[in-house]
Amino acid sequence: LSLGLVPIVVLNKADRPESLGRLESGETELELMELFESLEASEEQMEYRTLFGSARGGWVTEDVEVALEVAQRGNEDGGNAADDSGNAEDEKGGASSMRGLLDAILEDIPAPSVHWYAKEGENEVKEVDDFANEPFSMTATTVGYDPYLGRTCTGRIYSGQISSGDAITLLQRQEGGDGSDGNEASNNNSNNNNNNGPMSQISGVFANIGVSRVPLDPPIAHAGDIVTLTGVPESMRVGDTLTSTENKVPAAVTTPPLAPPTLSCLFGANNGPLSGREGTIVASSRVRARLVSETDNNVTLAVEKSESDAEKTVVYGRGELQIGILVEQMRREGYEMVITPPRILTTTCPATGSKLEPYEEVIVDVDSEYSGTVVNALTGSRRGVLVEMSDDARGKARLKFEVPSRGLLGFGPEIATATRGTAVMHHCYLEDREYAGNITRGGGSSGRGKLVSNENGKATLFALESLSARGTLFVAPGDVVYPGMVVGENNKSGDLEVNPVRAKATSNMRTQAKDEKLYLPPPKRMSVEELIGYMNEDEVIEVTPLSVRLRKSELDAGVRERLARTRKKQRDAALKEKGGGKGGKGGKR
Image 1 (spheres, rainbow, N blue to C red):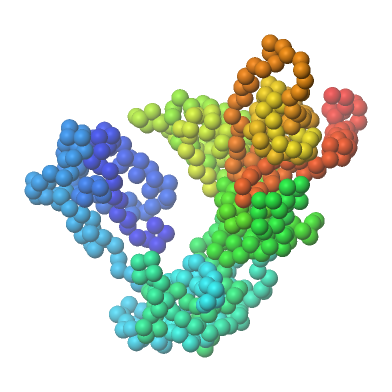
Image 2 (image 1 turned 180 degrees about the vertical axis):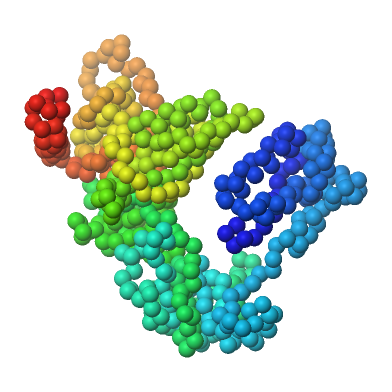
């Protein structure tokens, strides 16, 4: 839409019985109009062509009456009307084939074009040989590494042509404003704004045919071709520009802006008692190298060395889901690591000096009966604001919120449970706004404490059965536990030291209840994503290829107690200072 193109809208699955009511009422077309208005489409773009069809049935038509007829037949015949629609529909709109869609593409979609730096003859049809005189430029869509070919770069050639053996120069992506991608920490090269970047020589030009990558013969590609180049500089990143060394472009090609990261986590080597038992890669240097390599293709991640702890690495991401996916990939590769609680990235307003934090736009589609539950969950202690609410005839409600990124931590699993899995949530970065104050979320911050193991060994059924009355268990009989490991959630506030390895006493005494059958509910297993939003500030997640454990960052119970007393004194002193002494608001509470 930003390029001024007029789109083609195709409404698929028009032959389904539930589509009949939406076609008759025009509800879908109204939603499309609202969508284009929210995207700020022009009046010309609002006159888009709408097609109705079924990919499975193999038909498409521009006539809504024909689509209604096919949908009605599908409702009567159980969805098989598209196969025997016959020539009648073909005469009324071509509903027996996909020809209508292909014709619409040829009529409405403009042919692909390439950039031309020459000022004269811009609208003329160019021959392939003319590309040799144009400066070569290409932006990296994906970056990879081949053990035989070295660093590879895939993208669409923006201008000029490239062949094997040509000398190229790397122009780093122009950053600034909303386009900042936060990768400064992982790329220390300062040649962002000049044409003197790293140089190399192209060793191969490849094209993808199906799922195979084959070399071009002859090894030359022109503007508009999508190719993979080998021999590119090692510092190549997604969004960077490659240009010819002898005939450079004036500046790097502009790429779409990237939303900044919203939170950070510390990654470190597993230093727990079970370190090295389940994984093959446990060194902190190997963990850091793997995280740095992830930034080659994942432009939304940034990695830097921790200033407070040289053995840990700071990872900046856009949410607990993205961090959770990265951790799951690493644990399947044999890595062991620990992850600290997430911290939201805040900034300072240059004009007012006030503290700013990221806000996100949240859209939740849920059954209407649970809409109140979602509204209460986001607009209460999570500091969200309900912006828009709409219902449809199918009993679904769409809710739009503006919520601080802090308020979304742990919200996904919580709302899935509250709505019985009917809620579908989507959120994206909106802007930085003034700090919203204290936020209470689910998990450990909701007032409940944790059941913390004080013994080492395997959990027993006898011990867990008695502990099940005190809270929700996270471990099953036979699981290995150690002091400081969280084995469950306490029903009351405050942490509770428990012994999950206590065995049944063996004696000659016999009682009626001695040999009664023990019943234990199944443990609650949480994924890495859920634990990131659940854990407290004094806890870490221990991840191995076989297990995901939640434990205290300080395993010794005595040290934890002393640290808790120190934190309490600091909070009391801060409240007293804020309230102006005993006579103020921060006096005796």
